[in-house]
Length: 70
Image 1 (cartoon, rainbow, N blue to C red):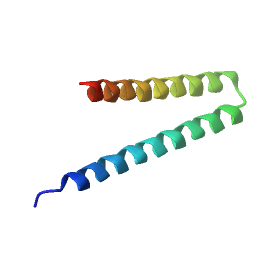
Image 2: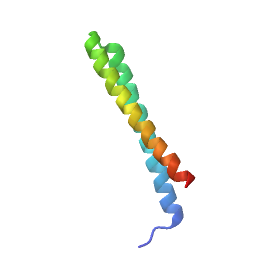
Image 3: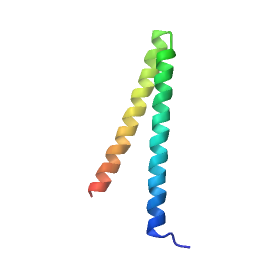
Image 4: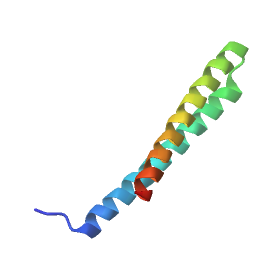
């Protein structure tokens, strides 16, 4: 059974919205952990994880932007 173009587009849109919501949830969790951490070393470790996650998000965003331009 073939998917209609409309169905495929809706599925892609839903997937992108789900990814964005997951990323927001992840960053809120990092922020909460960062502010609750008492030790400096713990805050540094959380910050590094948050930076790594942000780089991955923006790297993927850059890839999708490049694909749309082509």
